[in-house]
Every structure is written in C-alpha cells, then in structure tokens.
Image (cartoon, rainbow, N blue to C red; front, side):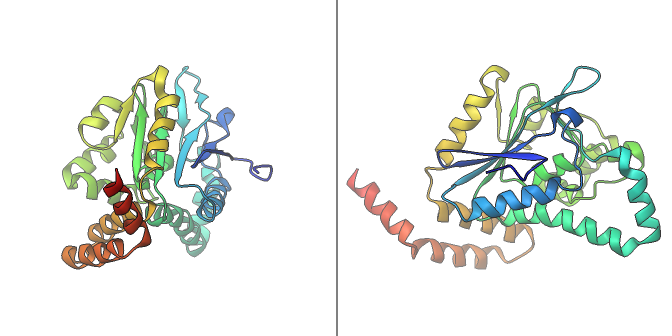
Length: 263
C-alpha cells in the first residue's frame, strides 16, 4: 500500500486512515516530496471507506535528546531556495503556492482531518497542523513557529490562520517571539482540542478517532464547510441556511433520525 512512499507511511485501522511521517532520522523535516506524498494519501483516502484521517509521526530525537514530531523545513537546502527566489521569483512563488495548496485542501477536505502531536513541532508542519480540523497533543508536546529566528516569516498560511484564531496581538506575539507553546498553554488558549497523558497517548487518539468515525459524515462536512466559509467572509445567515437545507434533505439525516426514534 505504501511501497512508493518515502516520506510517509499509510495505515488503516477500522475507519481511520493514518498518515504517518516516516523520516525520524531527519526529524521529519519537510522535504520536496513530503507534501506531494501527503496530498496523494489524501486522494486515496478520499475515495475509500475511511471516515477520519489521522496525521501522526514516528518521532525523531534531537541532539539535545528532545522528542521531535517535525523540525519544519530543511534548512540545509535553504540556500537553493534563496537562489531560486532571487533568480526565478515566479518559479519560487509557484512552488510556494503548491505547498500552500495542500493546507487549503486539508481545510476543504470532505472528511475530518485530525493531527496528533507527540513531541516538538515547529515551522511548516505546525502551519499544517493549524489547517487541520482537530489538534490532539500529548502532555509533553511543544509547538512553535520559529521562522523569524532565521530572518523569515511563516510561508504556508500560519500567519492568517493564527490571526483568525486569536486576533492580531496574540498572533503577533506567537510569531514574533518564536517561543515554544506548551500543551497546557495551547489547550488553555484554545489552540488544541485535547491533551492526553504521554503513556496513554496512542490509545486515546485512536479511541477519539474511532468515536469521531461514528458521526454522520455529511453533517460533519457541512459543519466544516460552514465554519470555513464564514471565516472567509461569506454571509453567516446565508451559509448556515444553505447547509442546513443540505443536511435536512440528505438520506443520512433521514436514517439517523429514524434510528434515534427507534432507540
């Protein structure tokens, strides 16, 4: 199922499709094919009986002994990107737009996308996490956007996603300081949905996804679609009425109501 993948591994447990970052030896840095492979995995799960997509990682260990979910972009190859940006800005913008397109795809995906972070996550992969529907973390997880430390800014949409979540001042503080956010703080500020104990993490995230998979898929998608469109500036009342009409006319709603009344 995953022989052609080099950066990720795919698994399926019941109705949960797992995308597992599979380069712990490089701290799961974002390389050229990483987003391409995740995009292909989403395409496969979209046409399968998978009801929930779960993004996890085989974590690496930093030189300081820190557990790492993803260290972000590959800085060793950044000179190549700088050269491209200077000599061929249109090509650079095209590659950046393609990468950003994956995050937009996650936001519009027709199934819930959950990311489960156990360890340190920074840079581009933290930006990807912000595009997911639900963020689950272990109690020892740490998160940051560290681009300003090397003279850059978040390029995959992290700025506008944090702005929508927290407003200008909090978004500015998180990005400008590049500080690490603990699991406890992330939960208190509403950045993550659940914090699980380290020893129970794998068990709990699979229980969570299994429970989520029991929910009517069409209703979940319409909630997701409504939130996304309203955040993008569409008329709240019109979007909610449109999607409520779609929900109430769906075979899924009819079956679910009948089942509820029989119990």
